[in-house]
Length: 480
Image 1 (cartoon, rainbow, N blue to C red):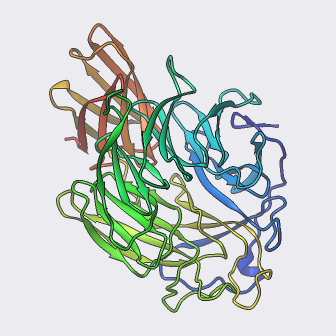
Image 2: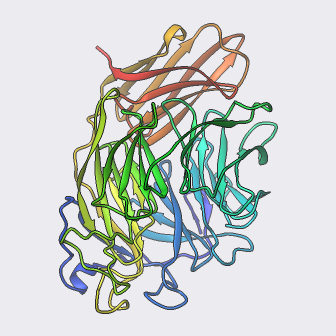
Image 3: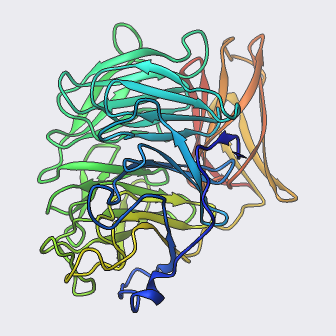
């Protein structure tokens, strides 16, 4: 069966169970999220050798398909977020043990990048249904990853010595080859591209947040710029609010989450109410972070524990606030989650949050009384209104215009001089994340035109990238 550009190994009948109705009332929370149901996944059980075991996920805004690393089926789950139904499995070659691990959709190239937690990165072309993935050999124990749209390169960290931040080009003369290998001082967690400055940020639990320039170093393929230490935080998941240039770091210990000002590395605020986070997501549309705190030690009096002891799985909800010069955030509240609920995903188009769980609702008396599957919540919080006309001024290069025509958000820009003859793109922060608009370039001139899936994020950034260099950047503002 061909679905949204990928051939799946198996297809399941659509079935969304209402676990709240089957197993009593949905536990109370104070985060304002709405329970939507549970998507069952083939072969998942609540206990035993086939109990739910997942890792990273990634959403494709073009097809509205969510991909999850599924270690029970040793494949990638594909979820249709328009119907909240299971589509099928994307097979991963020679996948055993804790495989797959990292999953990443590259929307502008329509590629799916998967790590096997060993030494192979698989790159699927979503535009060629049924095609075999390209295999790239890298250092051992590769795990989490993110995409640098300026260089069109994916960066991957590994978790066994020697440690590296490995870069693989996805296009050009070096496509599907390792083009960067930056030594690291410890086991890597989540790398993250920052659309504010075009740099890469990486959490290492034993060190803090590391900042990398992808064009630095003697080879020009990247080097460590600086390190931000976070006292009492074993940093795992992270995500960036581009409006305030802050990063919420999920501390996988009892110290609570940490909000970091990326301008200077200072810790703006700690959240001891939410602990032991693994994976988190950020919704640009409402500027909220959601933490997957499946081993949370602070229940706040709202949520039941699991039978593992004093563990209260929750989703933490945090609101970005303040200004670029005085950033802050607030804890909106917590939503009771299911057992082992640590690996969040987000569909920013519909405002839905997804959490694979072994048991829903969590039960302190038994670990097999609930439903395993992918739990769904919706956040009804207001999102940014669609601007009729907005723009980003890129200094002497000119202005990028965003205008609504019908249901489309169109992007136009002309840079008549001073653009070197190299691949040129606009990277735009929108209400669904980082979007890329390609530019035609010749004889020092670049003309850019395209259509966004989301809306330009007011206060977000637009970067003009050329040949792997950020030539200019400008904040997105409402136009008169």
